[in-house]
Length: 575
Ligand SMILES: [Zn+2]
Image (tube, rainbow, N blue to C red; front, side):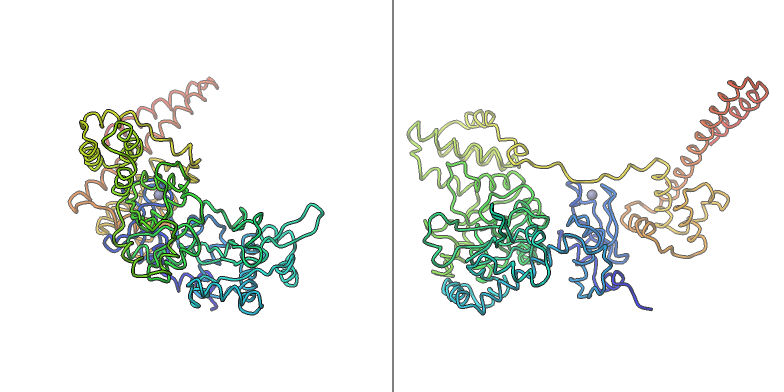
């Protein structure tokens, strides 16, 4: 029998590895657990079962197999999830059904072809060779050029679009990928011309966009932008992507810290210097979404920015937001005017030392504020506290916060109570307003009924200790919900059901913490509650029938039903 690509992908990939590439998983007995990425929670209720190859969150009730997970976390359709995972598994998808050829797929194809085109230009064209020479001189190694797929966009109007046209892509499609534009006069031209090209990758190392850095004669022209970026497309949203995260995520988790830099070249240079745990923000402030993604990998952030403390810069706001979200932030101090790439090129050893001696954000702010202003003059005290009070206020831990306010009081030679007083006055901006944090994009599942909950609990307890299966008498089986009934019938026949629903129950049983002696009473409780629910439903029905009979003025029927109601009520009380 020929297996489907879906089965093949499932066979080749391990769910723990796939989910582990997105989330920090902790071992929990035979399973793994994590803080759920799909709803906000502090205690992890997201579980992954390697034995069953499923995941389930007992907080928001989402769950499924690897395809479901990738769909949720990447926000893609099934066809895209299959493609992403097939690529991971090395499974070739032949003859794809047309419904899987989504617009996303089309744009991925165009971005990939464009990347190859730019790479080829760098290697083969005379201008490209010049660019390559320049990059090598700047310290980027040959292997890094390949790894980061750096290319060159020729200085022509339609180099790329002619190439894509020859591969039968439409102008409209090239535009949607962010690679082409139409002029006012209606002529079509390439967005990236005469530029060094840095492809931007998603978490699965697929190209979704580009940054083009000016090169050649153009460098001297003032009106030309130094950088050109892909605009927002279906694949690319600059507020959601961190440059280099696809290559850094494993290293970030291993080292448990992430180095944050500003430019593409910085990221590449830092990575090849041995710190592969580096990502770049591409010149924008860290967004709440990026912070959320980083949090999946580590809580420790080390920034190597040129920071202006007193100013209200985008960079500073991003760092403040990270601190506010509970990140341990450390700051690498570089020599004035040098970025990480310059520092490494000058002296790689010095760079390593700077990483190792990075200061905590509090030490950094204290050091800079006190060196900038005179702490003995009233105005100086004022300026220093203006910088430091908000930083102290943002410390989530109250004890740590008390430590730093004491430190500030000591250094300014003022009373600690006065600092406390001033701290109370500080209002931190509402970040959701400043950054436009979107409400969680969760399609909530309908809540389960009490009956569903009780029946699931019952089966979970039985799976926990199968010898108690006989507590459920055969005659009751028909009263269960169909999916539960199916599971129970199989179990009675000593078979293990093969369904997603059963796998979910089995995982639930595995992680259920209950003492052996509590199981039987708990099962009896569930059975009793279920019977009482059933009787109550019966009573509801009889009441309705009585009302109907009254309307029909069928007195005999009313009498019978009233008796039935009484009998059923006594059934309930005798439970
Ligand atoms: Zn959840």
